[in-house]
Image (cartoon, rainbow, N blue to C red):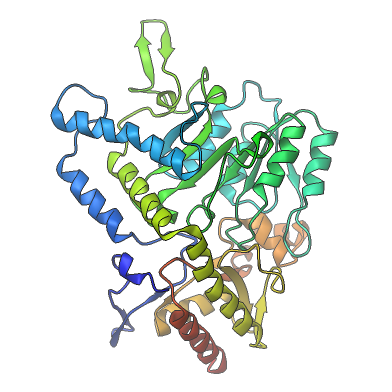
Length: 425
């Protein structure tokens, strides 16, 4: 299938060295994604009747307020939670803000412990370091995490109240078995938080699971990684844990009453949505969900898997290419591939792909420094020496990350371009 007709902007040419125009290839979807046409059309239509959310009386404001509140039901439906009053949808800017919010509101005392992994993006690592004690599950040589290790940590430390893991790695594309992890976490009376930024546009997520033991307690994601780049994301989480807490942001909309010396806070989700909300961003988010559901995640997975497997196979044939992660077993892996080229700095590879062939990739450590260092086999001591000598920028990889609109033709062009780059170096 070819889904390019559903997207805006991807056919606009770029100049290569000021000489000729070319339709670019975007293989950097793990960073952000272009908008769906339906998303742009939804934003345009809603902008014409834009008004304030829950601020006064007026036809436009009333309509926007109603649609904004109704949108929460659409989000719950997307994650198979429709009709569940025990979950709240809290709108945020992106996954990073959502995880920071959770890290700042879930703990009554600083002596709580959070269990996470060395696979995580910085957004699911750094916030917890400043609000709780943090324990880490190590990754194995291929970069995967062990469910047994998660259980070992929980069994040995009863102070662990929350476990937070990525649904899919932004480095290797590994998909973690979040429902199996949920079973383990709940067995030890803890709650599971899932960073779904990389997963949400590529696989169906059933937060309810097949039974209560498998349910996902909190999930955070961004619209800009699911073809709705208008500055909205969301937390979907257990209302009981999000009520009666001090909010991360304080201001209008989060309170019921403000007295001279006291404040009566609103309940979730309003408690955590201080300030004027990003109505157009939320409408974009819901519009993207509508398109993805209509296409169907089975179709999306089949399309992206076919391209991913071709790229892995062809990259494996190039002697100069070093692939990272489990290449032989790629079933539970998104269309995310990281590599280096022997004898060519990773930054040079990325810039030449862009400047000579119009192919966008990512390079560096992808905001996941500890994980990338482990994939590269770099010890903590080597990393510290490197940073002190200001050579940290010499450590990294190149990343390909696929989206729904990418094609097999683009994959073939990429392989041809990479071969040309290597053999003319």
